[in-house]
Length: 281
Image (cartoon, rainbow, N blue to C red; front, side, top):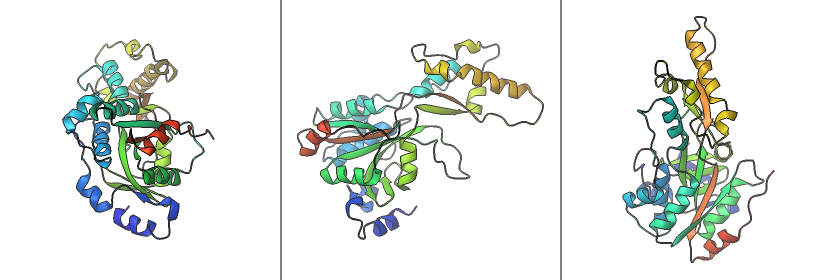
């Protein structure tokens, strides 16, 4: 979608559904592009600080957010565990922003799964006009446009504005329909892992019983990750042309929703602390 065109059309008589932290030109100039592997969360925090009038070196933000990396060279169990945690959770973003700002920035996470009773654009507009800076934590494997490949990760993006039925984000600079953003913001905490990424890490004679790598998380057993991998192996051995699993589904550490950041000593910062949770549908 054309970012400038959407802003121009949305700014005409849009009232309470229109709010911008930056213009599109300012966003082009100020946005931070991905600062490292799996570091979309730390990248978003860099832009949060900038939008709040603060500065921090990207490497300092990265150190405070403590991004986790994929262990691409590990056998399958370790690889899958790393995939379930790679990047950062909203808790890491909150802690990182507070630490790197010396306590000047606070935040509040609003989960959107299970579904909430909220009109996303007006809700975001109200907070943006008050001086809060939103960051979306989205499952990008949902609402994938027809014909496009399913992404292999979740994503954190700073929201620099909204207009009727549209949300404007950085890293990359984009405008996405409210319906698509809301779909990605309302996701169970799961991740799809591509077939080739599974099969290429299965070593000969490997014990599949190790495919419940986090024994403290019952979701690995509930999703039957081991059974999904066994199904892929059976499909590889089958000579008949039948539909094959394109992915397996594993637990993810992330929770979908919106984190709102503000200066601690601001009026909106105190409002954030007192705001009620969004009601369930």
